[in-house]
Length: 159
Image 1: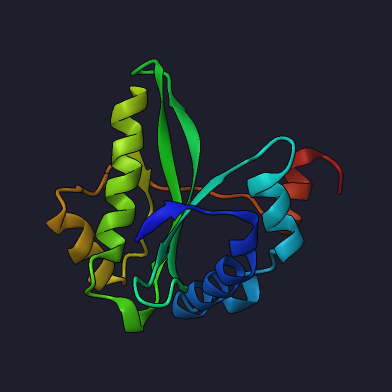
Image 2: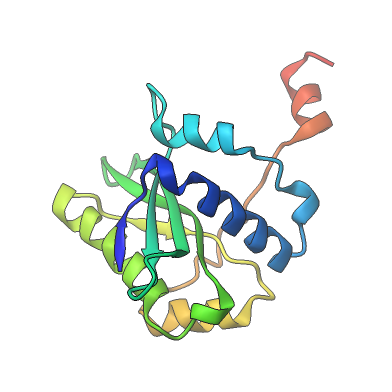
């Protein structure tokens, strides 16, 4: 049901990323190409890793998790930052999301990583309920900040 992604999974992962972006009301922001995903996941210097959930009867990719390593200066070890977790609506309730998170938690434990972290949109109550049912707790005292596009260029001094 859950396995590391392979290069052959890139088209399916790309399609699922677009579905997630549409669900999150930000399809216009999902600009990554299949070529960029291939390089990020399977290039000479991977920037991220992916696991996929497959339908047991057809083998079709129905969900994915893309993650990368982060580092805690307070704990002194790596952790995993979960960039995306998505399961097609038609496959939800079958345990695929939980299995993807379990696989990442197992990687953390096996490698001595001490954190598995991610962000969730404040309005996404189905996801929040799912995560909290697994024992995850929000980190309400932190606010995420982001520089992109023109603001990033301005901050870099190049515009």
